[in-house]
View 1 (cartoon, helix red, strand yellow):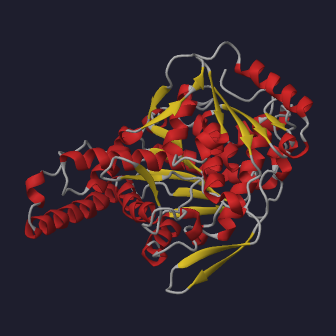
View 2 (cartoon, helix red, strand yellow):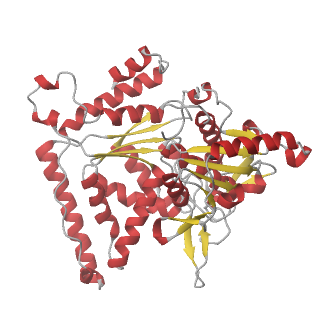
View 3 (cartoon, one colour):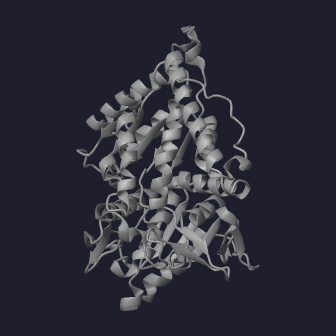
Length: 468
């Protein structure tokens, strides 16, 4: 790991950074310890539905599951020793957290130079692994719960899903770990305990220290045991003292972010020039048939009216004024390597939900390396307006109050509910329609989301960005 990092430094690809060097050494140690990772046992049969039809059998089943978990842990400790500890990496935007984790991930299962001379069978064992953006992982978990509940309405999905995940990947690497939803908070608390039972090693990057996770969220006291477990079972690595955003050192080439204040000053020449450039990026001819329906998780679809084989063209209102979320944006990114969005407004306190969805879209495009071309009404450095916010509490649950100007966002999925009439609405952490989840998030998380989005848009503006 350190050797690979130093090669990139010597090649001029990155600049040596003390915090990155220290993290590389930490990941080196984890890489070595993966050789002693215990194997994952064969999957057991699902708990039968009949065993959960009454409180007695249900309690007995849970007691047996708990006993099995305890014995399994003891057996592995006796046979293999303690499993490797995961690493939780936190710090500001652009300091190299994801870069180092991805470098580590790529090196897992890559033989060392001296592996041909090493007769240790462990050194040749393949480690199943998965690297995923955290909100995409949570969408996957929610979908697995949904599928399981179709067959076992009264069953407990979390132990089964944990075992599925363990058999699919012994190493899980999460990017952008964050919790803003009370439902996710409750799922994570139990899921990670079961993953620990199955000796799954987790490496996660986050912009929040463990104690700041879900800060200001409702019923946070129920989430605190998870934070304690995280600090007990993970090595916590802080990059908080690193303030250099390396993404901002790259310069956008001007071909992915355009802006014109035509609506204010009526500058048609600039506006027309931008439209011509967007048409050139779009390329080809838009299909004139009916709108394409892109499949989304949970049986939903998202409509695309203007598209060709490689590019979709939207108005800001089509994607960000509608009740869409990460699942929709991820599906669009899988379908199209290029997405154009025009009429992007300045995002302030008048566009709270729109800003949250827009940042979710940026995250989805960034993770999938989808080229996002924007035509906005203001320059990039003015797109997200600063805001003042404070967390107030009247009943023990924090609520975000946004003062005067500004805006907020969350990088995570929008949860959808369907009415009897078949219409879909966003569901918030309050359970009330029309109340933003971000209203119950940490004020610092909101400000950070804007900084991350701006940083990513600069990087995504480079000539080399996008799927080839």
